[in-house]
Image (cartoon, rainbow, N blue to C red; front, side):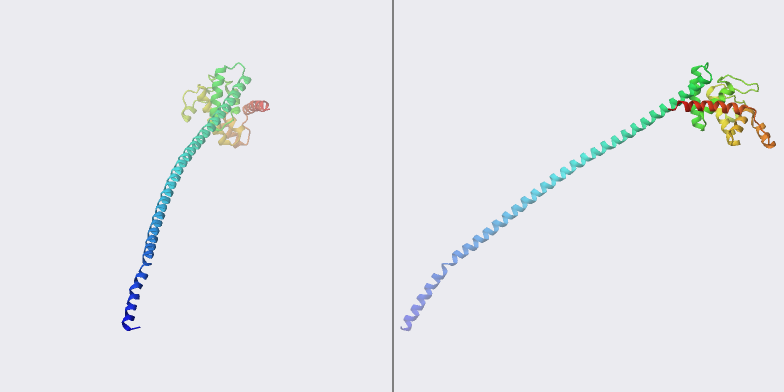
Length: 260
């Protein structure tokens, strides 16, 4: 083949080659575009899904938070209710204690009232109840035995608030007038005044002698004869303490007899 023809043939082939090779490039570009679009679509979908999930999660958190707040309010109400019940329970217990104390005090007062009527059946009952109330209260205040106080009263005045002794002692407990100034007292013939004064004087002598018989003797005779007898080593007894102790034992026996 001649050179001219050879070049011509080569050129013809070269012209034909681009045409052949250029055709498959379009489908490749289209495939890349579709992949890019698909990728973007997937990203958008994922982003939308993530956003929706985030919104849903946030809503769920809000619901949980609202429920927690509601439960907290309910728990707070329950706690307040429990506190209220606790306060009511304490009040009821305190009320029951008060009632029991009142019942017990009334029972002790009634017992003193009956004991006085046993010792003196003719005693005015209104006066007897007044004495019982005062004796119980003053004995609780000063730590004395009500039976002992009733015994002193029975021997000293026979429960007569207007009794006056030959030496000037006055009232239920036969208190000497000089004690009015010492104890800042008013009218010794008033049952409550006489009872309080007598109990205080008895307590004073009990602390002084540390012996009940000596204290009772001093209550009746005064501390002078008792002190003189102690110095001399003799007895100051005059039978008074023995009478008080005998009556006291009788009254305590009534308590024992009333127990089941």
